[in-house]
Length: 125
Image 1 (cartoon, rainbow, N blue to C red):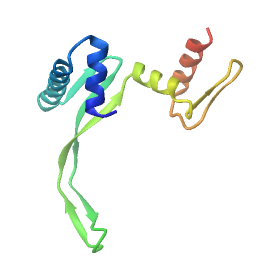
Image 2 (cartoon, rainbow, N blue to C red; image 1 turned 120 degrees about the vertical axis):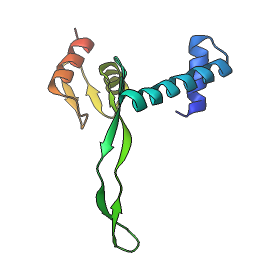
Image 3 (cartoon, rainbow, N blue to C red; image 1 turned 90 degrees about the horizontal axis):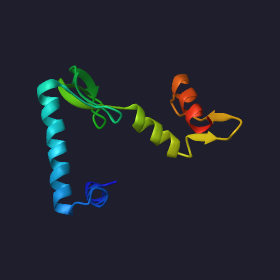
């Protein structure tokens, strides 16, 4: 989904004009950026947590010349999905999760055993 598509979705879902939805999205992105710069972490319960991670300086190899190069230290943004986002992603991703009434088979889904059991209870109470 592109930013334009997200703005259109927010506008339709919240009953806003596209211009208002764009301003709201830009404000949210600005808030997340400010939070990362000031606190190093922004947590949106259920959705996920954005973090600022420090990457140490390291050596790399230039793929063209095969020479060793020094890669400087830097700060990068990270994201860890929250429980609701994970649940809806795996629930709607038919390629990752195969669900039947009698058996749950997960293919490379990355779900923990706890998440697997929780998902099973939600789908088949």
